[in-house]
Amino acid sequence: SVISSYATLTNCRISETSGIGVSVSGGSASLTDCVIRGNADSGVFSSSGTATLTNCTISGNRAASGGGMWIATDARPTLTNCIVWGNETTSPTAQNPNMVSDNGNFALYDTIVEDALSWEKRLREYRAAS
Image (cartoon, rainbow, N blue to C red; front, side, top):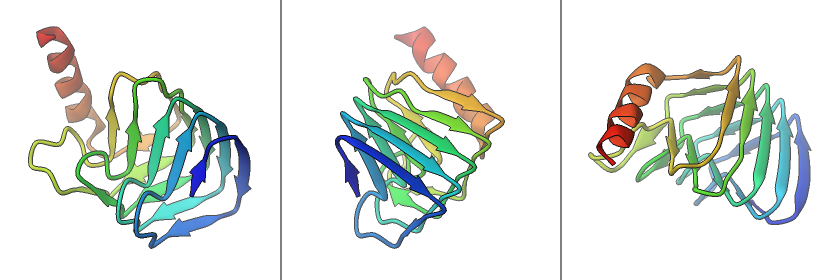
């Protein structure tokens, strides 16, 4: 599903797609009480748009990097009361299988991201070296 304008999804299940579960590119998306699971690429890809996820679960997705969520440079996603866990990467150099930010501006509120502490440490080390 590609959202390039505006969309509101409530109580949805986006699963088993052959690509990205939800791609927000240049638009605005609001997802509430949704499960994004088992997609063949990132569960959520956010690029140059605004994504607001509330009470959502992102799990079991698989991508080269950022199996759960990939946040591109101009993205501004906000996750509130969400769980991001159990996603996979196919690349041995991937930062975190659950969430990857390519300098996007994101906000997490009451949200659990599996392996987030080691991810934050690697992100700080990366920024210090840049």
